[in-house]
Image (cartoon, rainbow, N blue to C red):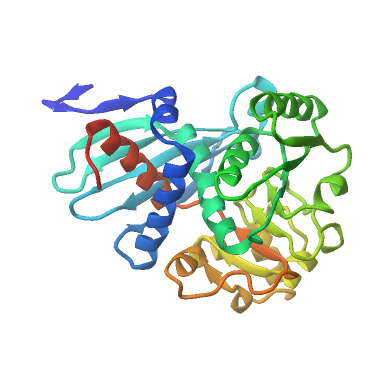
Length: 329
């Protein structure tokens, strides 16, 4: 696309999926959180605005970030329509705009869903690498939506997974997901669970990937030593984990400021005075830069609570853009 003599490239979902592998994304996210901790990249607070359409839950979000004077800046622009599943559409839809930090010229507009799909799971994998037991072989996916498939691929990149438990309230979605995984990964034992506890009781890594408004995972449902990636919710009113589980665990976050503004998984226990903010063990940036320790015992519960950061999106988007241009940064 040309505008005023400036060429802006359009990059589609299919092109992104070809260009950005999970090992590449995991490396990129490790570098992203190193740079974020060292304050060489930055972001502004996201704006999340309810649409005035009389439909509860429909949101418009703007997530801006800046990667440095010789790199890029820009934003992910997203819509969240929780009822889209009934229309066979993704609940999250959007685009990422990258601009040249040296002159403000627009460089590319690319599909945000594919970047989000990959980077969210890649960030979970970075955290899991620090927080899960090294010999972890069992993975649980709570929710059989889009993030289940990306989290499966990301976890396979960092741990020798051989058993996968999957649970979803929608039994048709569950059956379709399990069939697809068995076809793609015949070496895995994939178990469709009829009850939630079947997926949570005997696992090593547990990923909650739901839009739940109510906490459903409590301490008694999880074995000591389990690592939990709490990924599905990102508003102060929604959560997946009960307060007793959060209070019993070693909790790590993607960003202190972001989770203490947006994560119901932490804000609700904090409001109940069952989990003080000071109990957060560390951030992912602190883990990557070795400013804090990860798992310390085989029996501790660990939780990585993430709401998603704009720097993640722009870091992956810049990587794809540079790779297509043959530029290494």
